[in-house]
Length: 496
Ligand SMILES: Cc1cc2nc3c(=O)[nH]c(=O)nc-3n(C[C@H](O)[C@H](O)[C@H](O)COP(=O)(O)OP(=O)(O)OC[C@H]3O[C@@H](n4cnc5c(N)ncnc54)[C@H](O)[C@@H]3O)c2cc1C
Image (cartoon, rainbow, N blue to C red):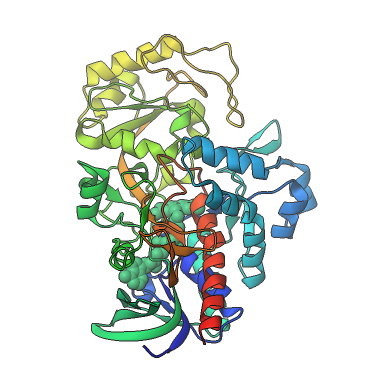
């Protein structure tokens, strides 16, 4: 069909906007199709805190990303390093060595360059004090490989990228749902779109798909993730229902990656079915390494301190979903309340407090109180009290002799006030998706690139399996969005 645009990008989140900005560097006419209305636009990216995992070899690299860092901040902070090897090791370890090595290499090696490029487009970054570094003996120390966040979190990130798109003359259509790809033997030449209720066909030299995973589709969740996933809460956008993945599969794209796997966390038990932009990511409850979690039977069921939360939170939603009634209570005492993240202090929280443990267990809805009290006493007795507690390092202060031991940050629960928070499983995004190569070309079931078709972000499979190092999703979208946009622009240029 005729060409209305050089490159069309399907999606309105971080990966899509990065792809559009990248394509625009060499193409004149770039169109972004965003299914959501403008006030809900930006996909999951807008729900995030904007945390981005990026390689840096020391504070000099961080200063390139964040020139606003003051000498005083640098003096009172141990930023450490996050080298290519560390990022690569984290990805391979948490995915149990299944992550695609070629795609992983691109993600790791181009992470710093991608963030510097975003900065050149107007995105600003800041260090994640508080969430990723605690003050111990007057000094902050960053841990868990996660140091940088976009200014203004997810909303700030989407605003900055959308502003850059506008400034660069990129067209953005809201309430424009891609429904299919226009395709023949020579490849993809456009997109079928339902725009404000009317179906139109738009021609393009190349198309980039960045329409997110299928986590907002309960039927696909049950089908691919398994029983009970249909009743999980969705943490982010209601618009990522897998239709962009499907339109590629329909023309012969290959599926890749961990289709039965997803990123899912402990999430406010009474949260709404989908994310709420007014609350953002604050329904999550990520300070569990400093307390314990009990299920309906009053039992602990997971090592809350197995690792820094960045390396456990994305797989513990699944563990909570597997508990009776699909919920758990997180329990803390006075000693650690000051360490709890901001999200514990929002209004929309299911929380109980008590002056004694006996009173507390009586207030835990749907929990066997007597069993819970026994469990807390057994846990208290098992804590290795001689080992000092330090939230900035894996302190080895664990428990011994329990059926489920805690490896680090084990404090006794014996100082009132006691607080407990109810959580269920919140799904973030699905891991299965489309197969791409290192140029972000979508690969067919025959193993060849589909001419004119590229993909980036959450709907790509093959990078994350079972688990995920926190802050990798946005970096993944930025790196591959940038690659996909450039590749699509090249293809569109050579097709004129
Ligand atoms: C609460 C929460 C907190 C998070 N925190 C972080 C964090 O701090 N750091 C991090 O790295 N990751 C975080 N993530 C994960 C991160 O959001 C994703 O990995 C990332 O945003 C995916 O980017 P994307 O552009 O691929 O998808 P999205 O940002 O979800 O964008 C997909 C877009 O496609 C659009 N779309 C869907 N279907 C169609 C269609 N048919 N036609 C047109 N458009 C369509 C959607 O409306 C949406 O705009 C978080 C996720 C959530 C939910």
